[in-house]
Image (tube, rainbow, N blue to C red; front, side, top):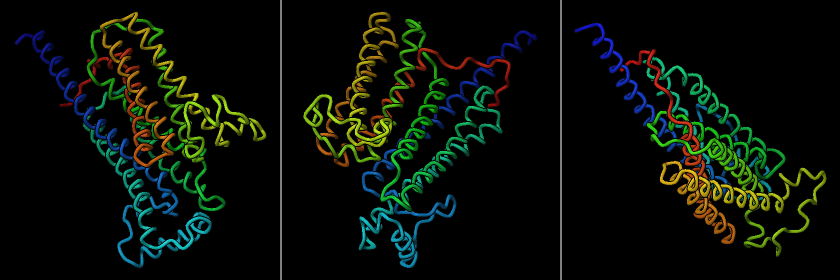
Amino acid sequence: MTDQTAAIETVLARQAALVRNRRLMRIWLGIVLVAIFALVLVGGATRLTDSGLSITEWKPIHGVIPPLSEAEWQEELQLYRQIPEYQLINKGMTLEAFKSIYWWEWAHRFLARSVGVLFGVPFLLFLVTGRIESRLRWPLAGLLALGALQGAVGWWMVASGLVDRVDVSQYRLATHLSLACAIFAAIVWVMRGLSPHSGDRAPTRGLAWAAALIVLMVLVQIYLGGLVAGLDAGLAYNTWPLMDGRLVPEQLFGIDPLWRNLFESVKTVQFEHRVGAYLLWTAVLMHMLFALAHAPRTTHARRAVVLFGLVTIQAALGIATLVLQVPFGWALAHQGWALVVLGFAVAHWRGFIGEYPVETAVVVRS
């Protein structure tokens, strides 16, 4: 065997190992995405059932074990009786009724811990075995750190409802939801970069920038949805397309100073969430039309069409949730589909950029 042949076989072996490792990492990240999707859905159910304050202590390790005896259940109930939500809203709640809200919050925290394990353990294994490409080591480590921060933000949110309020701060709830979705989006970005891309030429740089803008708009809309949930704003003004009898309702800025209306007024927050939906739907429609005009019969155009369909479904779910006065199933579908839209929007944007280049100079262990 000549030196040239040996060199070629070495390069081919490295490339084959790289393909295998990328496939393993995509499977790993896909499992994490499914777990985060479930976590966000259970978090939505926790909010819809007013269960988020049922566990009044933060026990990152010990808290994985739920009450196992009657005495332990009574102890948890006694802790709950000390907070304003019980004293002003749920006074006299039975143990069985308490269990029904406790299990939602416990499941949410259990899933959060599971996501940490599902991400952290494989990450360390891939890292020590050299399967993670150098360009991804710090970004993935950063995502692990963001996951830990998200746990702290979750407790920060819960703590806002334990002393002077009967619910959590809408600011903190929206931050908690938005950070979860940002982590979800970042994982989709990395996973998509590890996937083979089509050879279709990106139509224009403008369309790529528009795809990035759409992702940002989706994240802003999710933040506004968090404010709506935190204020229970979906339970008011349950008509569409009119709101309080008008396309643009009156007294949108009745709180002083004016900026507080954007975050604390039920009417204003619901209205800006509606306007955000209209703007997002219009932006995705225009993006689709330009993609079809400049790059017909390409994967970029086809993805733009699919994205428009997903956003249209989300708009329909939002309208149905509103006019039906936030039924449990419709509200969860609306929240879950928001993640579907976000994930596909990120993947669509990543499609304009392409997959990660092969690091041929790095030996990747098989």
